[in-house]
Amino acid sequence: MGIRSIGARLTCWYTGILCVTLLVLGGAAYGLLTYSLSHDLDAALEGVAKVSAEQARTEGGPFLPRGVDELFRHFFGFSPLNPSLELFDTRGRRNLTRPGSPATRLPLSPHTLEQALRGASTFETIEGAGPYPFRVLTMPVIKAGRVINLVQVGISLESMYQTRRHFLLIMGALLPFGLLLAAVGGWVLARRALKPVDEMTRAARRLSGENLADRIRETGTGDELDRLAQTLNDMLGRLDDFLGQMRQFSADAAHELQTPLTILKGEMEVALRSPRSPEEYKKVLLSSLEEIDRISSLVAGLLLLARADRGVLRLDLQPLELHELLKEVAAQMHLLAENHGVSLDYGPVEPAVIQGDREHFQRLLLNLIDNAIKYTPSGGRVTLSLRSDGQLVHLSVADTGMGLSPEEQKQIFHRFYRAAGARTQSGGGAGLGLSIAQSIAQAHGGRIEVASTPGQGSTFTVSLPVESTADIPSAS
Ligand code: ADP
Image (cartoon, rainbow, N blue to C red; front, side):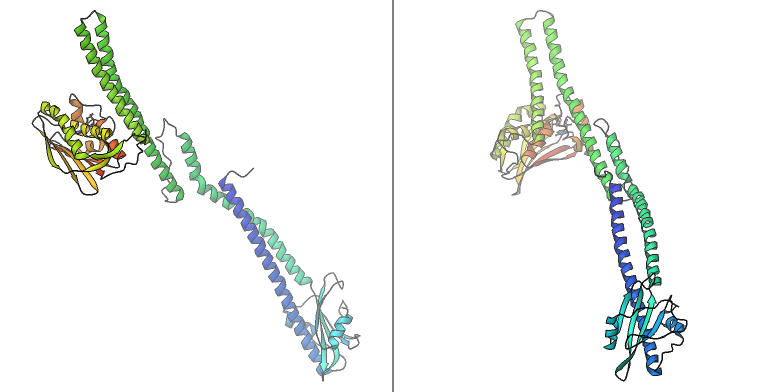
């Protein structure tokens, strides 16, 4: 089973990497140490051999090594253990041993002798002469082009082996200690660095559909985890808002449906309480029909919005002469405007053709013009205009009505929202008209904007691409 904590995995990884690195570095250092010790030792042996050979050559006759200890100390920098310096004759016999004779007598192999007689020096490592091997240099003493003697210089490798052993001991002791320190330090650091992740996990567990108010603590360091916490908090904020809107929407929808249903029920109950004349029943039925119309228009509006939200609004796209449609709808609304004492006029109306669903656009225009008449007091004016700038068609419905505050302008496209002025006014709708108009405009690749001054009037402008091809398929 894998390690499930990132902190533990990170610690394992980098302790492992550190271990490999230390082993490689240690191995390299060990190799370098061995090489440099051997190299120095051979150079010192050569120095001793050369001086001794020179002495044997110039003095001739029996070799009397003088100041051997000083000689070794001079070249080695210290007094080596068991140094050996001997002279052999050309037949390989020991010629003379230094005074106080060395404890070890190093052999002279036939091969080395042969090499020396040819004038060549030989380095060799001789085992078995003592507890540690010896490093030996055999050098010929040449006089007048002839080999007259052989100088053999040797030294025990004990101190070199000891140095290497010490090195290995120190490495062996430091490596686990260093690794342990790195592992503990790494674990603590990883835990500290990943602590915010644990907090995020705990905070996320506390969240539920009912409780989205909690937020993840931000450290304010601006690092990756802090940015993640900010992003999650932003997302939670949006989710919380969205859930709030959904709850509000359900409550508003239920409320809007309940009102006509209560009226309907009340009227019917009253009608059934005592026998009525056919005219009275007819009156009740007509009034019930009115309420049923209200309910069905509300349900149709909700259905349209739900379809638009899901991106499945059915559009029967056709080239639509918007100027013609505008005149048609205006003609339908004339009577209503007259009844309200509002004049319905045209501003500049340029011909404009778009790709659109006729029925939906009719509804959009009806909603906008109906609002303009509804929220304009008697004596006011509603002006319809249409202009095209080549890319976009701008259709506006301007009124001289009650207007909207900037705060209200931000909210009027929300579902079921009604501004303060509309709530006190009789005959107001459910607050879905503008949401529906906006969904229709958006489904055609357009948008609706409002410009308004409280007390002076509002202008709603629908902007649509000329010959717009809506992104929603017309298939049902
Ligand atoms: P409603 O069915 O209440 O008219 P809408 O979605 O059409 O719903 O409009 C939402 C709110 O926007 C209205 O209740 C009203 O307060 C405000 N509103 C819409 N059109 C106008 C307008 N032309 N002048 C002033 N207020 C308006």
